[in-house]
Image 1 (cartoon, one colour):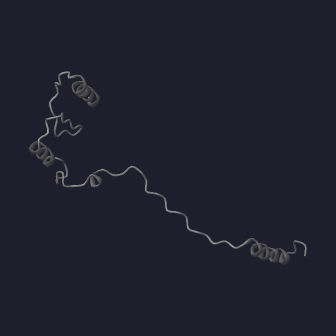
Image 2 (cartoon, one colour):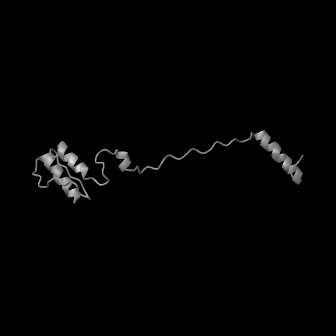
Image 3 (cartoon, one colour):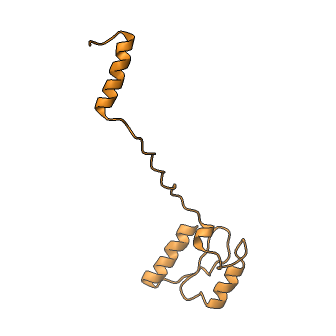
Amino acid sequence: RNVDLLFDYLMNRLYSFPLKTKAQVPSRDALFVPTGWDTQTKVDQAASQLPGGGGLDRSFESIVISLEPPPPTPPAVEECEDMPTFLRRHAAILQKLGGGSG
């Protein structure tokens, strides 16, 4: 239904075909406002009938939530010991266990 309405509207705007559909406000499924229909009075009237009250006073972001997940937090920085310290510590452990050459 919405696709047919869009097609009819585009044909009207691009090729001057007659538009037989009138404005549909407010509708639960769709909002159709053809060019030239919207005066400030009509827009205010339609906005006052929007669900949730407040009309057009609320921001877009307060009504429509973002579908993108928040960016992940970077992993914590780990401090690691340098190679000679690591090898000395593990060589000592191997010596205690009886392994390794010395």
